[in-house]
Length: 249
Image (cartoon, rainbow, N blue to C red):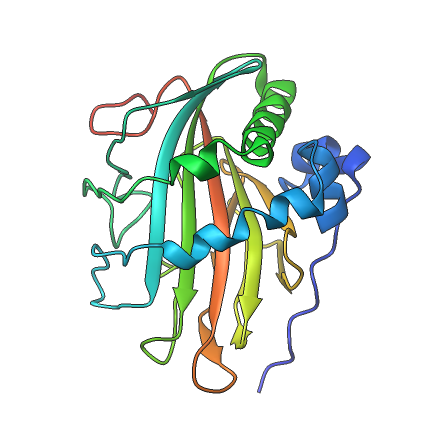
């Protein structure tokens, strides 16, 4: 049996940009993530009940019933956050061998969630970070609320395996985990042997990735007894346009 992965090695808020510019990924501790988003843990926790009402993901090609999700798209430009009319989530096969090339429609993130100041603060903070690293510009943002559960006995956070998302930056925010083991995060250099493995345990621990430079995955989860689940908020930031058939690379 392999040894358990260590808990997430965190980066200070002051060192976030340098870490992304260096090794291409960083982890923020919950308190630093709250400061980064200009909010508080209490305000972040007010978002958590919405994960109890996620519809089943009907697009899983492995036939699983272990993933629930909602999806929304935004354009963030400076201090402006514009919600885009509901659109399909699409990835090319080169980035998602399992679900690439499909237009996947999901139920939208609830309006009451989007209206919360903490939600807006999160979107703006990552856009400001992206602009700091790659120049001031509008960012095309997709937000995914995920619940991976053990309905099938095992739940797969990344059924497509280790991958990139075809965007500029990715944030994987742990909202909570309950009654499970597993869910180890693995981050690898896209062009070399370097890698790191760890487990995000505390709610609001946040992994930030330079998607061009690293690949990532999360290992399956299993119940400690009966049933368990792992909730995340995944945000992707892309320059120039959303992904879609015929969109610029």
